[in-house]
Length: 367
Ligand code: PHB
Image (cartoon, rainbow, N blue to C red):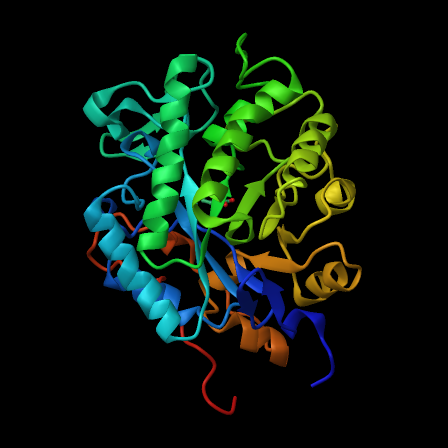
């Protein structure tokens, strides 16, 4: 086998990843009641030939909930459920990080404990809608957190990181992207605070860095990744100076030798938008000298390009992993990829939840 960077191993702290293909975090909504189950263990174990799996976004506390049937990692049951997942992945030779997540304003009272308003940096609703138990609803206007409440949320991330260790994960990824709570603190459109968590770029980065430091305190830096999406307008995100904001944040993260920073390229819908950063990796690489995981519409050719140029150390694949559990082998052989059925992306009930989830075949032997 010629030395193809995509299939070469990578050392990340104590971990030896067998290749540079990561499975990107993807919400699949099969954790009925918020508790990971054996169907999820099967799904992740099927994809264990990835160099690294990053799980779907996972609630760090009850108020982190933005979707029906997304998993949590704050209760004993949830930790036990995740242990079943990590054991199945490890038994299949894989490596798996848990994605730690708080939805912030991307929620609705019907998803919140006691029917309360979701919490966020400022009382500004995001743009979009959600499926809830009461039907499809617009994102709610959140309640602005008091400064005094913020340390408790940082503590939820810390406790969730500790629970992830107990559940047998190899590390964690902090979800700082996609318009969720950390991103809401970062970007100007959703953060109008006048205290130490708002206003200047340094202040808006404070919450993200406090969470990063808390989680690094649990795991050590080389088992922690941070995901960012500087070019995406998901759920109404926008900042007047994304280069200044994310450049500063990456400079701060550069002081911490993390496992990786996970950078999302603009979504198809964001490409061509006035002011959008079209090449996130190329634009931000110089601000962060450690390992970068590149995400967003990659093919084998584009993945090899960013690995060969040294811009990325890992490439994550989302959509391609839905219908191709043995994606690494298919990329290696150059086999055409199977197309996913998007109607089964999310499960609405346990009935038939395996459809479009664990029933995509691998290549038959010798094919
Ligand atoms: C992401 O990591 O980009 C991500 C994860 C889960 C979501 C959305 C985005 O629901």
